[in-house]
Image (tube, rainbow, N blue to C red; front, side, top):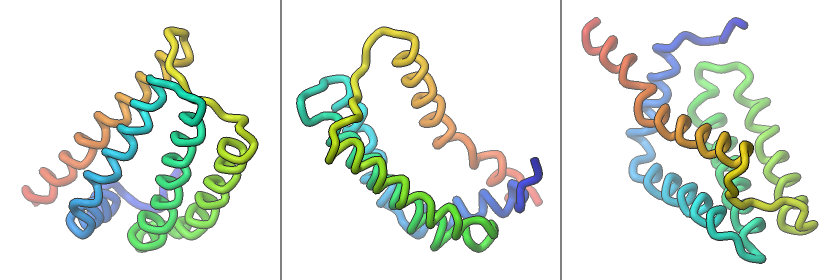
Length: 139
């Protein structure tokens, strides 16, 4: 698969996003962490609450990440920006309106793998841009 951009422009966009929107990342990460905590302590409304968080984050990704920042390097950013709010709306309908989505952590394989992927993604969030930053400083 051929990406329409190289790592350097991608990490440049990430750097501009991070510096422009700081401290919004603290709010976004706290919101996501709250959703994880809710999944570990399920209630009658936890599925809807976690789904609302996911829908909000998808919409943020569409409008802020894709439209405002990624469109400079990715010609498909507008397609992603259109698809993400639609997915968020469908997700909200199924989870909040129809109550067909449920989040809870159990000790089964699916929950453990989901937690492992979440931890991996969180780790990538804090380490992915460092190589590009180091390379840019030494060039």
